[in-house]
Length: 217
Image (cartoon, rainbow, N blue to C red; front, side):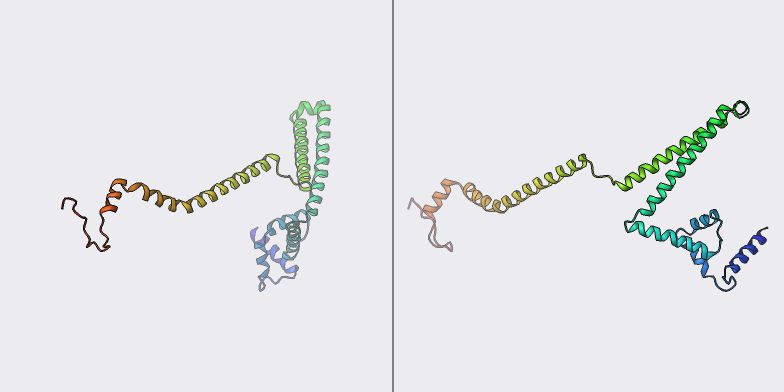
């Protein structure tokens, strides 16, 4: 069975124009972001599963992603509108089946859980549809900072400005502090009486040759 699937895969690649025995360049596409999802999209769309077709799908997805990155959300808006319409249709479809089951005595007797399951599916579709609507509204009307955040930011900026002013004032006071400190120290550390006595009896010789006179001589 595995060999048959392998032969079929090789045959498909050969039919797509890829030389399987020599050219292996198609294998690098499996590392391309979105390539695996492109395979699923190709299967759902019943497209060929050759490397070139899958790469074309992946390239289209990457192109849309680049538009979104550049600020163009038109493709996303189309997807959301399509999903809203689809979910709305599914919700109506499942609810109609649920109502039909509730009205059928045979269904309520043989399979009483079926109408409830259809009703739950309908409600789930409605919930997902509301999410798409909310996302679309947010995409078209981006949320702005609330007044609380604005007030908090303004308070922080004002506090920062006050702290800067206080720091500046302290630095200015610190530049004058050494001068004032030395002057206060000079006036307070010396004993006034000893300073007066030294001034009266100190010799005039600055080298220390002069001696204090003995008042008793």
